[in-house]
Image 1 (cartoon, rainbow, N blue to C red):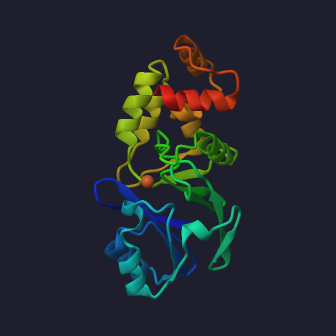
Image 2: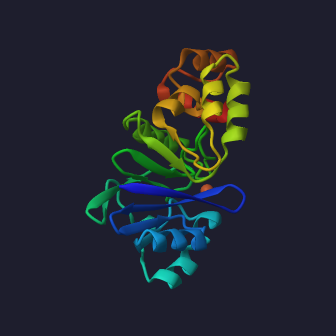
Image 3: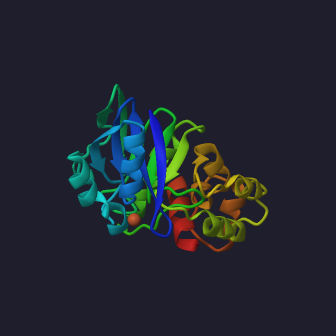
Length: 232
Ligand SMILES: [Fe+2]
């Protein structure tokens, strides 16, 4: 399975995931760039879907549907672990409520499209209000192979690293991560996220200490995640 990233609006990132000559558009705000790319590569966009239903992620749906005649897959209808056949390969849906109730991620063998659930350097806002669900969703993602590439819904890297540094000034890995940043291809690995993304570091002693100093509950892993989200 292959993936092409498309930047649109101020910092949105959309994707065409494809296998051989069949593709699925995910958060297709960059309609013209996506159709140009598909045409050049002789890819038929068979499906259009979204990571969640926030306006900036669905803004291209109608125009792309008109241009391609693809089948629209409503993310609210997905079941956890559902497979979407793309060419000869399958893309797996992971339901990941938290940022919003209907948020989903899409997993291929070596990459993950995460929308606003997990960013490169931070996690999404918990607009659903359900931090417990968000915790379980992130646990689902962090259980994947460390080399999994993370393709998220926005380029928030610069701001996220500033916040990560403010929270965890002694973390040397943040500098390394910053050096690798490329605005033309915004991507990190899950392993890198676990080293720098403060909201995934709920089992790291330095982070637990910070929470204890501020009297946030931190006995269980879930408590520590919720405390991190509330503290920072
Ligand atoms: Fe969003």
